[in-house]
Length: 262
View 1 (cartoon, rainbow, N blue to C red):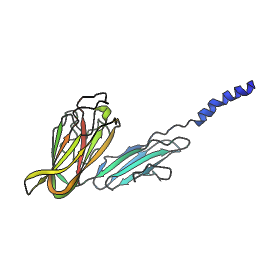
View 2: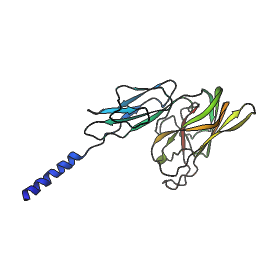
View 3: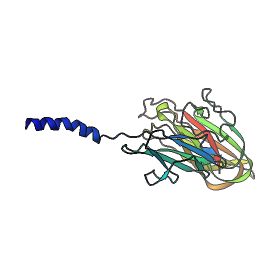
View 4: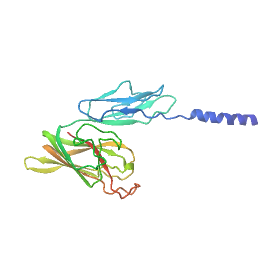
C-alpha cells in the first residue's frame, strides 16, 4: 500500500504538467496607416512552428474555420475591421488583435486648429488630414496632444458638398491620462445666411475605468444633411479626471490624429 501511495505522488506532478496549456502570443499586425485613399495592405506575422494565423473582416472573432493568413490582406472598403488570432496545438489560441481601417471622405482644402502642446505637435499643419496615423502609441509622431479646456478646428472643403457625418480619430490611454473628449460639437456654415448652424453633437461619459491603449474613432452624424464647404468643430477636453483614477481631479489630455468628412 505504501508503494502504491508513493507511485501516485510521483505521477501526479507529471499529470498536472501535461494538463497545463500555454497561451500563444498574438500576431504582429503591420500597416502604414489605418487611413487610406483607395486601398491598404496589412501584414500579419507570427514566427512559431506548427501555428497558423486566422483572420476575419466581418467583425466576428476568428476561429479555426476562418481564413488562414498566407499573404498581405488587401482592404479597400470603408470601416473594415481586421481581426486576427494565432492557433496551434497543443497551445491555447492567442488573444485577438484588431484594427479598423478608414477610407478618405470629402477632399479637405484647409484645416486650422488650436495649437497643440509643444511636446505633441503632430506631424505638421496637415496632420489632421494627411491620411497618416491610427497607431496606438503615445509616442507616435502623428498624434496632436492637448491639455486645454476647448480645442477648436475649422475645416474648409475643396468644394461645396452634402455632408452627412464627421469622423474623428482619438487615442484612448487613460493610464497615461489620455481620455476621449467629453463633448464633440460640430457646426456647418450656411452660405445663404453667412452664419454657422448646428450640425451634430456627441457626448462621452467616462463612468468606469478603461485602461486600454487603443485608437477610437467617433462619428458625429448630422441631424439633417448640410450643403456646405465649411465646418467648425469644438472638442471639450475633460477638465477633471474622475475619482476612480489615480490622478483624480487633474486636467486630462486629449490626443487626435485625423478627421474625415462624409
